[in-house]
Image (cartoon, rainbow, N blue to C red; front, side, top):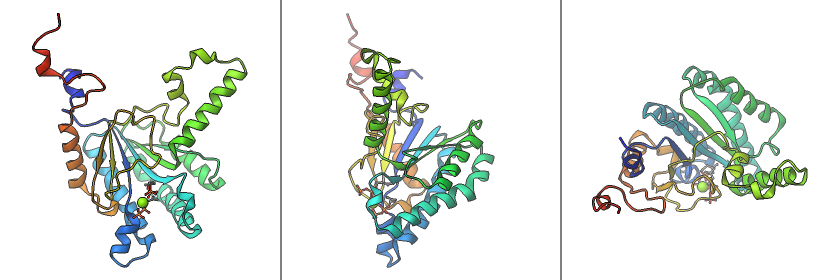
Length: 252
Ligand code: IPE
Ligand code: IPE
Ligand code: MG
């Protein structure tokens, strides 16, 4: 298959990023506390990791706590912190056995020391794994990420380590939390909301977006496959022109 065909959306994306939204509404619709929605959201996360591996996705990024989510009531914020801790403590061995490499993106400065250590341990202990790369965006916000990257570049410039004229797109990308990851080709948001909410603004510059009505706890294999099928129908032009038929006229 030529790369032109691949860009036309024939094959599955290598990197899928998901804004896991709708836990609260899922619970509310059933008369349950929001926390129950988050618990069921964790089940959906586990299921999605297995499905992604199974479907041959190479990188799966999951937005699980944004820099804006601190605005929620203290009880909900601490529940979500606890849920991440629980997930890493409980699932790390199984993930590692499944050859999953774990990466966490987002700011670590505001995290409690024990959570920070846990996150570091998840990354270092799975570093050599060669299967699915599972990226958890936790305390992540794109603007915060770009701000942190800019500060580092500015500090390097002031210290004379880098010439400002040499700061190109690649130099910026190298400073982002995602420096070792490819850009996502597909971003899925569940719950029917049609906004980005500060997720991967730089990296998703040319991603395809799918806004699925399903609430995150109900996101299953069929919903995942449906999103991938939609992706394969997309015509990705990257500012150029559609591939094959126009080419038949030839270029002089
Ligand atoms: C997504 O579900 C989980 C997080 C943002 C942490 P929500 O908690 O945003 O659920 P809704 O959007 O209120 O339904
Ligand atoms: C986006 O969902 C963040 C995560 C899924 C972690 P939100 O529920 O926080 O987004 P808004 O507030 O509806 O934009
Ligand atoms: Mg939400």
